[in-house]
Image (cartoon, rainbow, N blue to C red; front, side):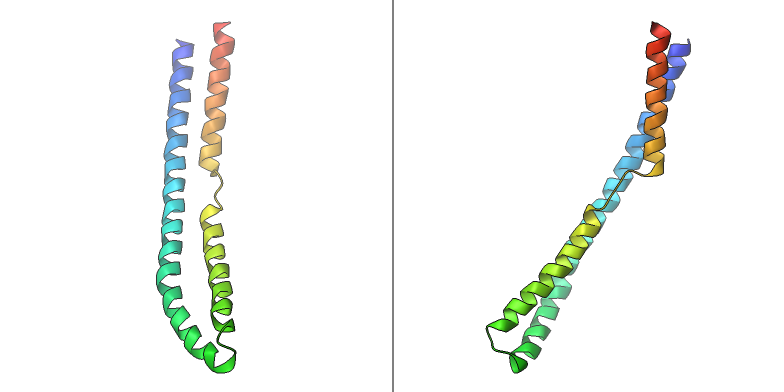
Length: 110
């Protein structure tokens, strides 16, 4: 009977961990999508405005290179924000509870 309760606890902890992980991955996906949308729309408009302003002050060949560098930095910042994701406290705690329950099952069965 104790093994069944421990197994149930392990399953509930795993379900909680998976739900938290899916929520985190959803937020991560949303950040990535927002980064892509921003990169494609806002930077496209900034590109046009930057090109217009730069070609009056510098040689025509340098204007697109400067804009390319600026776009790369902005895309890198938002890409890093989408990539920075670590398991939440809920996920870590659920994993710990599951591992403890499974460890107790293996000790109980011996």
